[in-house]
View 1 (cartoon, one colour):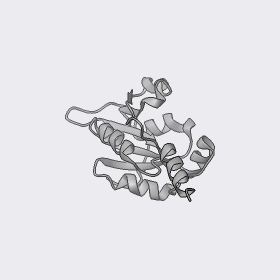
View 2 (cartoon, rainbow, N blue to C red):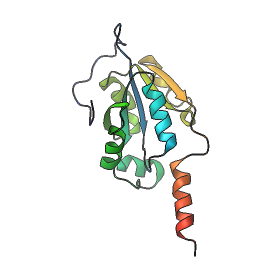
View 3 (cartoon, one colour):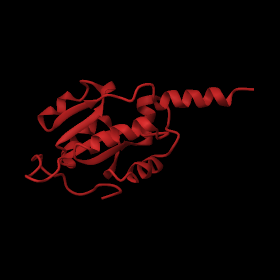
View 4 (cartoon, one colour):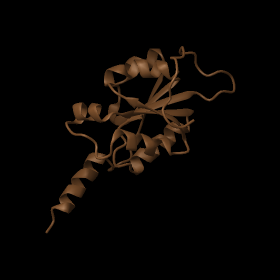
Length: 152
């Protein structure tokens, strides 16, 4: 399944015998880079991966700036990955529980820079924090591009 995931919120039930668990992860995925790919691939290795892509407005509120690529472009990039079964727009951090329940998540996977931040959801799914790819971040890429563009 590609594109936005829609439909009624399934009850949290856990995977049935022979069924792969539903894994959710969230991110901005701006200036898509190897760190994004690695965490998505690792999350997908754990089950059927559904990805919440942060809206442009959520990013402005969270980081004080809009992403380089629009939410539609970022959703299309993430949805194009073979290991991603679905994408949806994350509009508010405060709605994570709703998203997890709506998509029937058995597991929430996040980078370890969020360690402990989502433990409150362990009552409805397993919460796993994976190590980030060292020395790779969108913020550092943007800073490098800015520095290079200002060279004489």
